[in-house]
Image (cartoon, rainbow over all chains, first blue to last red; front, side):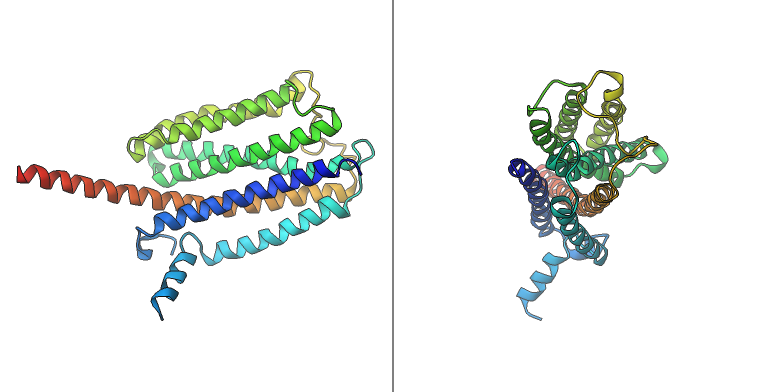
Length: 44
Length: 252
């Protein structure tokens, strides 16, 4: 299967970049949340 | 309860709720299912061979980008409409645009890999590819405009206007394969009354669309809440700066 490298690369790029994006979202939120008390977060 | 456990508890609940945790778990199961079906269970295509497996990431990625940009436009319109004006709409628009740019990028890269296998080239200045790249760049510009500074409402107003203009590109991208001679194939499922795709392949494609949509909802909720926190921190910083300035003026 000569195409396997391209196929696996497409899945790695897709879910890898989603994983990086999600970790950025979570780490940014954690950083800013240190300055906001939990009771001020409308969703909690 | 120790200080460390309180801190851990707080970190876990930064932007998450029981709903987002449940949604995240369902999405992770869906991703595993999609990868299994996309790489192993589904058959190779008669014409495309094994490269069709890239479609299960490429097509949902493109769908998600369209959805995210349309949500950005609707949220922007809600902000501009006087009766519904709220910064919540602006933050939904911004969060959705970020996710849309991510998925448009994924769609461009996976499409490029598929193109190399099918057309023999990573890139060609075809109508669909060119308009998609233009759409991607437009929304990167939109995100840059959001970060130009000013008050939250200034940011919201200027980016809302831009979002309503940018969304007009989506029909151009979607119908580019019909408007111009294009290497890119026309829609195989949406708008096609004679779908000839294998049942398992069609199922996997729909599974991809559902999983990516769940992922979008999860990301949107977390990112919108993160932007809310950021705006609150900005407001606190502004209040502190104003108080310091007033104290300085009062003492002189």
